[in-house]
Image (cartoon, rainbow, N blue to C red; front, side, top):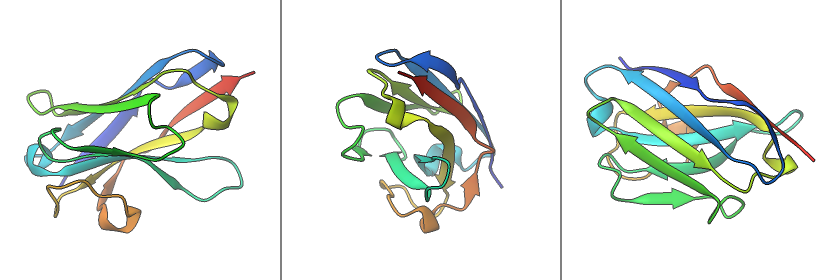
Length: 125
């Protein structure tokens, strides 16, 4: 079992930055693929970023590439999403997810088996 708790969301002006954290409990975190997804009102959940078990490999959606960075600290059982140059279209509820059956990067949300409760990110223009 893995439990995930996100934090760090909030209201920020366009061009600003936020860092989301996702604290995980459970022994499988350090060997699990981790990802960030987001869901805006009226839209489907979409992939944002993914990390392999070690953090050595990462992958990003085109919409956030060059602005967002996913990282993880397995000693702290935490994964981060650093978000820079935020845009109003980044406004969404952000979720972290763990794929305990995978060690590589995973883009497909159906392959993740644990999800956090989400944290709201609002970017004003």
